[in-house]
Length: 113
Image (tube, rainbow, N blue to C red):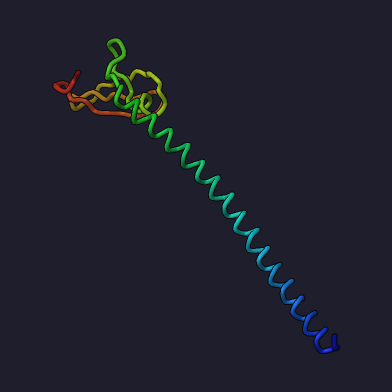
């Protein structure tokens, strides 16, 4: 093997090694991106499962617990039965507010359940 041929072989081998390092760097970056996406996918799946459970609970909502109005927000979001507190307003309507989540609704006397 001549000197020129040996230098060409070494140059090509070095170029191949540099390309391999670039490819390895790309593989590492893609693997890291995939791990990040899989983590994000799991977070979204968890939120989706919670939203589906909330939707199912919404179908089972009962406006009253015994005789007290129930907070729909606490029931749907957390499966918690929480009665609404009633406050009278000056405009002849009642305000029903949840002491836990703060959800509120104004109910005219004719709208009472």
